[in-house]
Amino acid sequence: MAGSEKPGAVRGGGRVEAVQPRPPEAYQFRDVLYEKRDWIARITINRPRSYNSYTTATLQEMTLAFQDASWDDGVAVVVLTGAGDKAFCTGGDVKEYAEFYTRRPRDYWKYMGIFAGAIDSVRNCGKPVIARLNGIVAGGGNEFNLACDLAVAADHITLRQVGTRVGSVAAGGATQWLPITIGDRRAREMLFTCDEVTARQALDWGLVNRVVPAADLDKAVDELAQKIIDKFPECTRYTKQQVNYWKDMAWYSTVGHARDWLSLHFMSTEPHEGMTAFVEKRAPRYRELRQRAAEGGFSELLWGPYTRSCHACGATGIPEGFDFCGKCGAKLA
Image 1: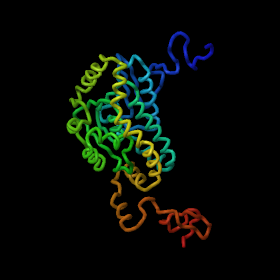
Image 2 (image 1 turned 30 degrees about the vertical axis):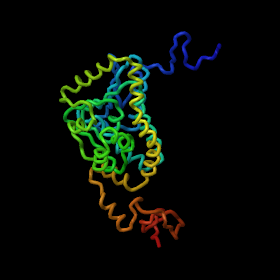
Image 3 (image 1 turned 120 degrees about the vertical axis):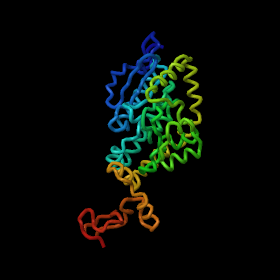
Image 4 (image 1 turned 30 degrees about the horizontal axis):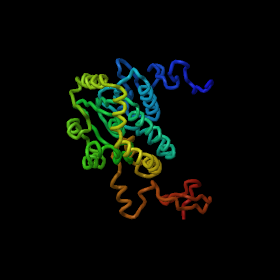
């Protein structure tokens, strides 16, 4: 029927311009290095000074890169890694969390949507994704590792979750996928203690596929990629879709709830104390917070519930822990 083509369609070519891949340099990424060559797309988090932690902008760039690799018929395998040799990825930039999201928790809900979209771009890109683990794998970095299909690790790396250390919960993939990857008891140990797991331990537990000397990392990743390239693409894509089943069940049943709970939680004392301590390079006051609650005090809100009023200026909703009005400075009755 004349005029019925969808926007972006090219007559006679059978290609839709809206979903055509672009050359990597067209994206002008700042936080991500993106390369496509010889059937392999390489996506590198390029923030080595911050141990390849990701900001909101980094996640948006990663999503675009994975989307492009997904659409490119010249890409058979995607490799995700971090710049340098110290870190694969250490999760979210805690300085950004402390500066923005503890002050505007409603914006964390928006951020969590961007993060979940980035994770989904890895899992749903239609190409096998290999995590090239070249250094520290921590927090959300391990969640990206879990989102990947395969992982090759240098023998010096460590892996860990850090949520309960910094006032958060690792519900961006770790609480969902660690139990079905390494087993329930091991998952609980990683999540509750935040202890490091060595590369050899990770191999024994099934958290990675291969461990090699750092000098052999690229060779090992390439050997694995070549085996995947020499398989049928549609069969590979659907195989990935099928083996995603249990991860999909765990993820989609919980991530929306996690997004809302974490957004509300960012108003409370735990993320404020945990992330401030991280930025200030000191130990969080875990036991002080526990003691407050044990003694019947307020531990959820930094200065207590908003119960007081000022007789001098009429201000209301003043935290219970205040002795003076924050608006006029009058001593509270």
